[in-house]
Length: 396
Ligand code: KG4
Ligand code: ZN
Image 1 (cartoon, rainbow, N blue to C red):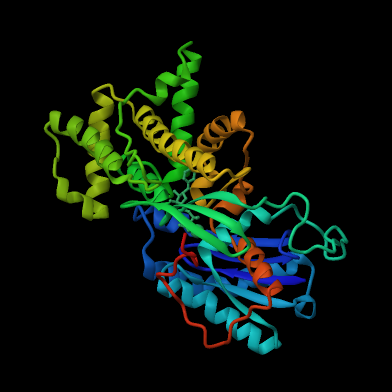
Image 2: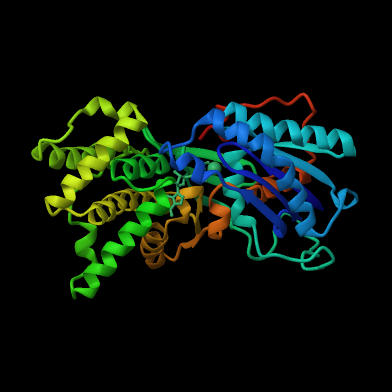
């Protein structure tokens, strides 16, 4: 079954064609990161306006790269939530219009569920390949193994979810304030690094570690140069990252303050003021001998520490055999390595999507859609966007 997936929940515009929920024929993503870097975060109106102009070329490219025409497509799926209303509207409306024009079944997809289903995606195949000829469509060798513990970590969500089977989600814990990706983005802004913050912080941290190693010092030193707080929220599987973000802000602010330079907390609400403040704060920090890259490394270590330990505890308590990562922060190499180290002695495997399927993409939308369509589900063309949509949790 060939599904055309469409994704436009935030700043990316994506279209992909996936066979049987797993095999990639094409995956096109138009990124707006350069545009939003100027503002230190996504500007919703700019994002949706940009998506209006890119969605059709992106769709055409996805069909062309897959080497297929409309006669090959069996169903269309588009994200309907959660996300930015204006952005969601672009992809959903185009998806529904195409389904009507080509008389194809349509399915609206939950973006968070799709991040989880990115773990079902495999390599690229040709249109005529018989790679996926397997009679059991619900389970194929190499698929994630239920029940699994899923850590969903994106720009807007951080949730620990027990997944007992297709579509069966139990919420164990969630962030009480900032999402993990949001913390990466905000701290990157404080440190004067680029948007999106996750890759920028990861790169800075890697550089700090390499520098120390070259000097014959241990990489561990880089990770703990600044003693940053961890919010354990013991006895729960909830997370909290805003205290950590504030601690980083105070460190930069403190150094800036010492140098008698622009020193106002209220600047946090204004992108322009923040970057002006942080640029000055960081110049001061560098003059004061503090190192932005070491601060980035210490911050990343604090986030990874909490995410890895709490996920391992949940995996142990619920006796799962596999932990699965989902969402943009799942691309983080330190998190992957640390969690692997936590789980290996317990004989629990760790699965995560290829980097290009961690951040927003349409391949994961088509993958999630496949498993709903298998269960006979479909949406009418009156489906509306749901910006505040959550995973469909069942009660514990
Ligand atoms: O899943 P995603 O692409 O979009 C949402 O659904 O929100 O996640 C985006 C988030 C951003 O906050 C970005 O900074 C973060 O994922 N991210 C990373 C990395 N790559 C992307 N965070 C940490 N390390 C990375 N390598
Ligand atoms: Zn996402």
